[in-house]
Amino acid sequence: MTTTRATSVLFLLCGALAMTAMLVADTTPADLVLLDVPERSDATPSIAAHGRFVAVAWGATADGKADVYVATSRDSGRTFGHPVRVNHVRGEGRLGGELPPRVALHATTGSTVPSVVVLWNARGDATEIKVARSRDGGQTFDAPVPLQAAGAAGDRGWPALAVDDHGTAHAIWLDHRGLAAQRAASSAHGAGASKKGAGHVHGAGTPSDGAAMAQGSALYHAAVRLPGTVEPERTVAAGVCYCCKTALAVGRNGSLVAAWRHVYPGDLRDIALAISPGTGQPFSQPSRVSEDGWAIQGCPDDGPALVVDGGGTTHIVWPTVVGGNEPEGALFYSTTTDGKRFSLRVRIPTLGGQKPTHPQIAIGPSGRLVVAWDESVGGTRIAAMREVHPGTTPRFGEVLRLANDGAPNHPVVAVAEDGVVAAWATGGETSRVAVRRVAVP
Image (tube, rainbow, N blue to C red):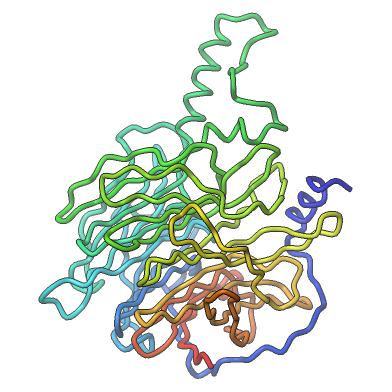
């Protein structure tokens, strides 16, 4: 079996299970808090922490329509206030596991609570990326601000969010307006061409030429300065893999670090990274984090996550496939200080499932670094996390299982003042967002 075929089979069978056992520690069930909008299915969480303040954003769905909600805690996730709806247009949320609403916090001088910034993908006449800010700790939100150019054609989504020290909200997202332009050109060409040549777009590629076709998809960046001025959108890179989440973090001196899954020649779906010196400055040319050799004619629907520590080192985690003719999924970890040179990837020990997935990473003010993911083991879906100890040879702490039952998925983590807080979707028709303070040994 070829690598492409083998990995494509794994992609289609990503729920397949392995029976390998591993000692897994449980957290205390009494620590669990459930966030619930009545008569809705709650899922797709994201989380942020500043001191003892914790904010969780998620999507609540009924009758196929989703809204974005936020709940906040002022005691490091022990208790939460009532959910507050963020979007003004009811039911506009276009949300999913790799398409969650994103939340970030910004401490403001003279305020006892940080500002809460939320980003989401909205559907309407066209898909939009929107940002809204709360200046009172998540109790009310300003009118949402759209980030893409008015009337921008094509689909867009899979956004990421970061807020710098000045309170500027930065966003990146995947955008299909290039593909829409190709299709428009194809239609115009086809109207006056013979049937033999109608519909062909030069340079668009063939179904087996994923790198060429991906040129119609790009990564965009835009920013919203206080009090609400939008910095015009700009293209970061073309040739992106379209259905994998993106990642964005603020580095030293206001720099921005972005990561996404890129399509390289041969349908190789590796992680790329680019850095901007700061607001209004262009991003660098993309650098390849690791040559993993995962060839697949389709989107894995599983992207990277990253953080930047106080010394300026970027820590990145991502999922890929290894094993050639007997492929298996794996999570890897790497670091960079300049966005060009990367440490050798190190495999993150997981639980033995065939495809650990949806990795997330968080860092605290003291440098505490934790990763979370979910996978299926022995017929049970597990959301798990462990601490990362960086170094020349990184070490990983004990595996901590976050949930004891249900079908937990898409866990997210944040480091609060006095501990780690995790959130995840419980799964099923009556899914809720579960939040738990996690005792990390």
